[in-house]
Length: 517
Image (cartoon, rainbow, N blue to C red; front, side, top):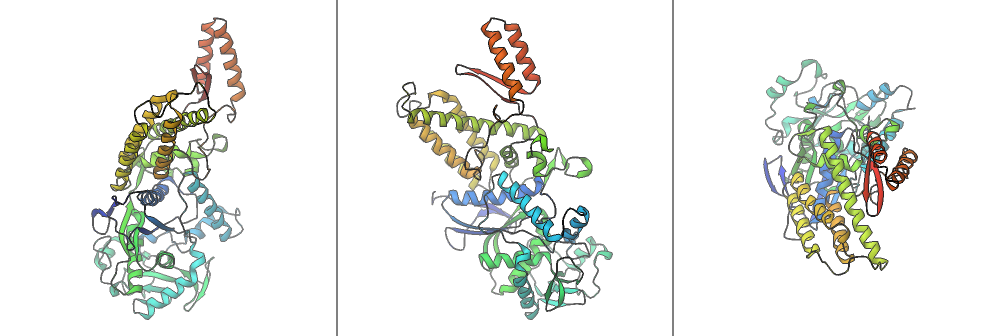
C-alpha cells in the first residue's frame, strides 16, 4: 500500500523492537512453526498461529510481497522434546495408543488431525500459507542434511542415533541465553538422558534408530525416524532458501527447538550469515487467570468453542474467538476470559451490522430508490475520515503488531457507520465498503475470507427456535395492534428469558439470539 511504512517487530535475538529488513527488498520470506497433529489444536496454539497470520497481512498491507511457509509435524516430535533430547515416546504413537481402535494406523490419525487443524485454521480466518509442508513428505532431504552435518564434523553416530555436536557450534545459546553444559545438567533429570554415548548433555538427536517405530525410514544409520528439530531447518531451506527474513512460533519453542534450528541451519550453510534475521515469539495464554489445564476444566480447543451447541460446542462465532485472541498483543501474556469472549462477540456483531448497513445503502443506490439519501457525502467526507482511521489502524499494526490499539482505532470506523445508519448515500457507502474490505484484509474480523461472504448472523431461517419465536412475535404484534400492551410486554419478557433479543424499528420487528458464551 505505502512505501513510507515498515514493519517493526520485537526480535527475540536482539531483545529490541526493530524494523524488519527483508534480504530482498519488498519481499518478506518467513517461516512459522506449525502444529504436531496428534490431537485437536487448542486456543493457545492458535494464538501463535494468529501472530504469523497478522505478520503476513500487515506485510501485504504495506505493499510487500510475502512467501509464508508453515509446517505440519506428523513424525518425530517426542513427548519430552522440551528437555533437549531425553527419552520419550513419539507424540503421534502415544496418540494412536490413546485413541484405541478409532484409527487403522498412525497415518490415518495424522490425516484426521491435519484435516481438523486446517478446518479450525479456516474457521478462524487465517490465510493459508504459500506452502504447508508435512514432515513425513520430506524425510529424504532430512536424511541428506544429517549426512552433511556428519561430513562437516557437526554430528556423530552412536548405537542409538545421530546427534548434533553442540560443542561444534560456538554460538549455541545465542537465542535463548547461555546454555552451557552445566546449566543444562542442572535442569535435566539424569534418567532422561538415555544414551550413554552422547558426548555432551546438550547434544540433540538428528536421527533416532528405532526399527520398531510405527513410522520409520531406512537411512545410512539403519531404520528409524528423524528428530523433531531437523524438519524445520530442512523445509525452511527447501522453500525459502538458506537464509530467511523472519521465523515465528510460540515462546515455548525458543529453547530447545529454535535454538537447535539455528545450530543446524547455520552449520549447514557455513557462510557466517544468520539463519533468520528476526525471531518473533508469542507469549503464553492463560484462561481466567490460570494456566490452561484439563484438570482445571479450563482447557479449550478451538472446536470446543466454535462448534454448535447441538454438537457439544459453545456455538461461539469463530470471528469472535479471533477477535478475542487479537485483543492482547502477541508478546504480552494474555488472559482469556468468558467476559472478553462475550465482549468480542458483541464487537463482531457490530461489524456485521455495519456491513449490513453498507450493503443496504449500496443496494438502494443501485436500484435507484427514490427514498435513498442523495449526494456524494452529506456527512462530511466520510471517505477521508475512514482513510484516516485505516491509516492509524495500519500504523498500530506496523508498531510491533499492536492489536489492542489497532482494534480501538478500527472501532472508530464502526461507530461512525452506525452513527450514519440509514443516511448513508450510495457514494458514501462505497467508501465505507472499501474501508471494511481494507480492515478485513488487515485484521480479518469483518467476514471470513474462506467463505467468500460475510459470516452468518443469527437469523430466523437458521435458528432451531425460529418457529416458536416467530409465533410469539406474531402474537405480540397482534397484542400491540389491539392495544393489549401488558400481553405484548409479557411476550417480550418470555422471549428475553429464552435468550432472544427483540429489535423494533420503523421497518418492522426483527430478532436474534443473545450473545452467551
